[in-house]
Image (tube, rainbow, N blue to C red; front, top):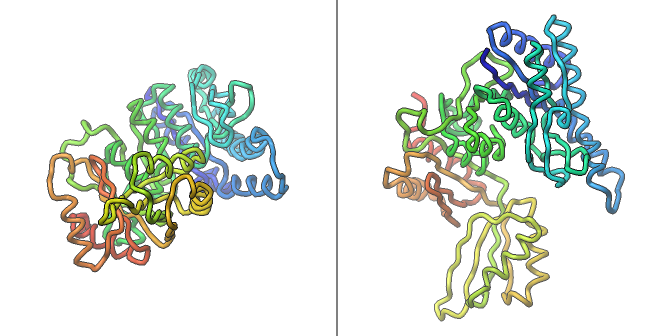
Length: 407
């Protein structure tokens, strides 16, 4: 029998009716001849509520292991309810918490990383003819404490379980029916992609697309796990995330992504000397603040420079504070910050072999009167920073310019 891991997000198990719907879907898949393991998130909104309860205690400091102990409980509810719903339909099922399913993680509470999945107990359950239902988002540390994987961690749990079981694929059910060329809420002519490469999906996830979590895509690419993104509310074909070899002919550009979660900082009149960039970025790195786009411009006299870079908007206050504290060591005049910016990205593996992709992007934005504040590139991506007010105009214009509009 072909083994498939099905992962359902919070909206898919948001209430009892939706859990019953998932049970019917799992039963139908099983009756079609598949062997099924299921990974579940908590009900939509539950994790946020649990986090709010912890934070409402106003503790100046607390053991983060206790935070995980509380926050991990949401998935325990959904796996038990789905097991009961399946048993009601005459389908044998058994639920597993993350540690029971063999998820061994680092001890980095609230942001743990999966070290190993010993799927022995899950395999035995499947061999006994049952549906195995596993709590996503969680595992156990080397010290024997419950851990959580951070936001979107259930996607990672699903892919990791599929890799450990040698599953044919990991079906991720969510509230959208696949991966689109861009956000359909902005571009009505956005097209759903039948297939997309791991690299393209990884780039799209990293620059703003919310369909899949970045870590899950990276893990799938590392272990060769095929992912299918599907809607849990409609019976429509989804989008397969696969190796580039499985796509016969790739487009130059597969999609346009955007992120409104950016903030730009410019450190003005920095002494232009060896090591100055390190002095700026080291305190940010130590505080786990990720820096993205970086642009440096040197003054006419060559003695000073302005260094511009981006961080996530939520990290802006901390970044400003850290740089001000290090002002004397760095040596600069002032910092100019702007949170009203957006990052627009053009993504496609075909860019490796086709010239002119960046030119088309720059020309299109210029024709719309959109000024580019910063640029970053990879082998299959070009990203630009623009004023946030131009986000939707930029996405629509680029979607058309690269011939992605549906007929």
